Amino acid sequence: FLRSEENSFAASKRGSFFQEAPRLRNQFNSDFFLQSYLRRSLPSEVLQEISPDLENFGHRVATDIHSMGKECELQPPRLEYFDAWGQRVDNIQTCQGWKQLHDVAAEEGLISIAFERKYAQWSRLYQAAKLFMFCPSSGLYSCPLAMTDGAAKTVEVAGLTKQASMLQDAYKHLISRDPKTFWTSGQWMTERKGGSDVANGTETIAVPQGDGSTYRLFGYKWFSSATDADITLTLARVQNPDGTTQPGTKGLTMFFMRTRNEDGTLNNIEIQRLKNKLGTRQLPTAELLLHGSLAHKMSEEGRGVPCISDMLTVTRFHNSISAAGIMRRIMTLAQDYCVRRSVFGKLLVNHPLHMQTLARMEVETRAAFLLTMEVALLLGKQECNVSSDEEVHLLRLLTPIAKLYTAKQSVQVTSEGLESFGGQGYIEDTGLPGLMRDAQVLPIWEGTTNVLSLDVLRSVFKSEGQVLKAFHACVSEKLSKASSSCPALNSLCEQVQSSMNSLLSPKNHELLSDSLPARDLAFSLGRIYIASLFVEHASWKEATERDIEAAKRWCHQDLTPVLTQLRNNAYGAKSSACDLALVMEG
Ligand code: UCC
Ligand code: FAD
Image (cartoon, rainbow, N blue to C red; front, side):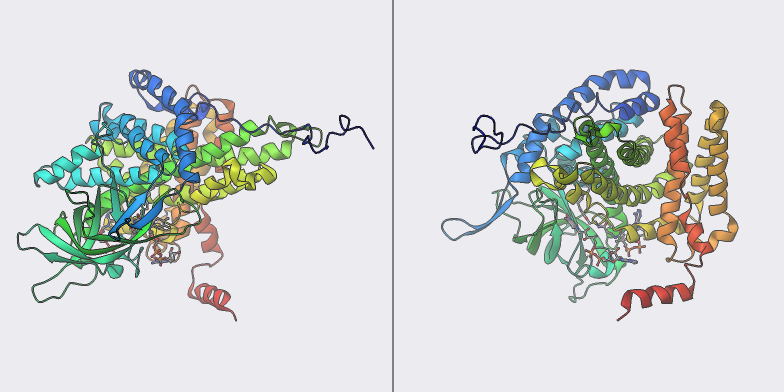
């Protein structure tokens, strides 16, 4: 036997090698791409003014905010149905970290920045940069914030000028920087019969109280993520005097509701149960019974869906920010890990095959970031009334495209990211699996991939093709500017232009008349637009060789999968029948 001091696996010792964990550094200072993008996109005086805040926040999301988020993961919400004396209370117990994140959100201006508009049309980009760093550390507090932002926007658009002081008051709370007065909002749309098909799925009825504005709601909301919110926007069918309601989308009206009464009790809401979910466990997602909840009509009768669409635009934008943020986070950790982990005699960073894998993730991450920030710029312009008609159309088209594209990327990149840590990537205590579980919801909520692909078609039809004209004009302009300022990009720009021209050629208009190609079309539009953003960035005066390389790599993939499928006859009736047969075989 070896003497115990020579045996490194004696009971009192656990071996001498311990792998260093990946380190999370300041998420602003260490993000080269974020910094260079902001330098290019913001006026220098704006950047100079907001940089100290971004730097400070980049530090916080890697330190104290990160700890709060971790606590939310480790101590998920619990539902207490009854108090000690048997009274039904339906209290959602959340951890200290969750409560602190509420205060952080107010103090850091995560909502207010967008509405104060101190930096005019760049305010949304400033907000997006903060949220991008925040969401992977936020313990999913980013979710109620998305809905709060969406509610503030909807109240601003629908109510501030003409409606009651109640809405003006709510607006002040939603955009407050004071934690004591800051409110969050929910968005209660989904019912048992339908989350996508809200028009046919909504069973909730609104019984008028006789004053033309207040109603009592009766129904069952099947998913409510911000159950501990102060207010919510929701849909219901107004009951006619004879007890009937109008079916379909024309029967839906949007309502504003306080979740609690003045005395703190719930507004005739019973929390039936918390959902047991794959991820997003930090969130108190619940099923709610509304049994006479007092609500205020906010839209015109029958205009609920178009009215709540203002909220959807903002929450879908947040979804894209979260997707891009989660991708950046796993990338940054994988990048750090590859200089700490040695395998087969050398560090991971010295294994070209490993670096090829990470480089592919990096290109996807940059792509998601560029597309999301483009939406931020367009939204900021629209809100400051400085958009051209073309930019308004573009915002309408790119919002669903960015949501559906980045959500799918985030699932793929977080999965690859976990693998880049080997077995450790699968271990809960590292905090890594949570990123993947949380990413998996991004393509589902706020409209699934197919539903958003159909929304892309909706935007085309509704604008009589103007959104595609705007798309073509904007991409062409970016390409032509890029190739004249950076000749090295000429052939790349020509290639993208030609892909876009083929895609949007009149002979392909049939693609827009059917739902079957909708998904591939949306992905094609997404890839082409991202290509134009890559070359735009690569042609900037401070661009690096890596920016040009990233643009090339992006453009060398199939930019128009819809045309590839078209050539393969994938959208004919025969192919459709085969789809059915393949899926249902046996
Ligand atoms: O999932 C949810 C919350 C999760 C947590 C949030 C986290 C956020 C990110 C944070 C990350 C950490 S809340 C539930 C979300 N639910 C959805 O997204 C619903 C998905 N389904 C759809 O989007 C459908 O397409 C519907 C419900 C919009 C379809 O409704 P309709 O009524 O059947 O559709 P119609 O008939 O085509 O449209 C009715 C009207 C039309 O206007 P008018 O009447 O003027 O012609 C449409 O143009 O609504 C208009 N409209 C829109 N307008 C429909 N969609 C839009 C749109 N996107 N933008 C503008
Ligand atoms: P379905 O509509 O039944 O979809 C099933 C499948 O059919 C999907 O793959 C979909 O893409 C596909 N599909 C649907 N329609 C079409 C079509 N026309 N053509 C082709 N394919 C189609 N909702 C809220 O209102 N508030 C919340 O706070 C909220 N929080 C949530 C939190 C979590 C964690 C989750 C998972 C969901 C939450 N939701 C919330 C609900 C969410 O928005 C819905 O689940 C989502 O919109 C999908 O609706 P559904 O579940 O009814 O699926």
